[in-house]
Image 1 (cartoon, rainbow, N blue to C red):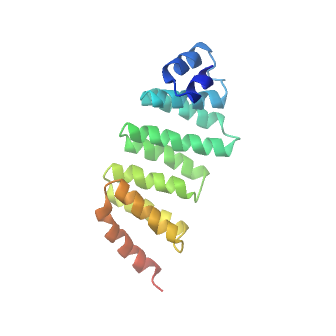
Image 2 (cartoon, rainbow, N blue to C red):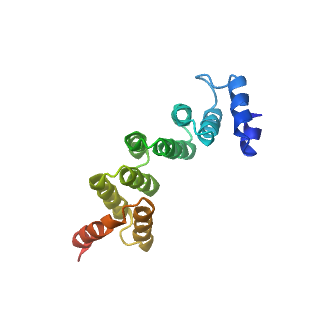
Image 3 (cartoon, rainbow, N blue to C red):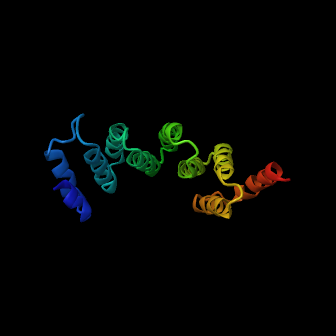
Amino acid sequence: MGLAYLKTADYTPSRLMYAKMGGLALNSAAADSYNYALVNAYLKDYDTAIVYMKKAIKLYDKMTQFQYDAYSACADFYMKKKDYEGALKILSQGRKIYKDDYMIELKCIRACALGNDKKNTLKFADSFFALGAEAPAASNMIIQEFFNDGVKDWLSEFFDEQIKKYKK
């Protein structure tokens, strides 16, 4: 029932159903923890959402695509709370498992930029760019991220460094 309410965007009854079913004990299914985290996030209870998404991360240890999504969602919940260090911490755990994944790097850029951390924003943008320096999409994604995060003024410094680095 909790999932049915979740799918219809009726989050309060969904949360009640998940809580009533008692399936959120330590041995609950990963999907239940994941969905319960989403319900709480939709209700802006990010602290509870983070607890259950971290649980889903552990339970999805053999299902990498779902685990990857759980890392990503958990980072988003931290960023909604404006806890950019928390977001980076969970993303760094994901980076150890999903090396060279451009979406994790992009979320690291976002967390640092939103936290007004220029040095690390540029560092993660550099590692993101290195994954596809010759792909025009990489530049476009960085430009879009910097604009979305309100740090477009840092773009010239970033691209000046990339020109020096990749000049041949």
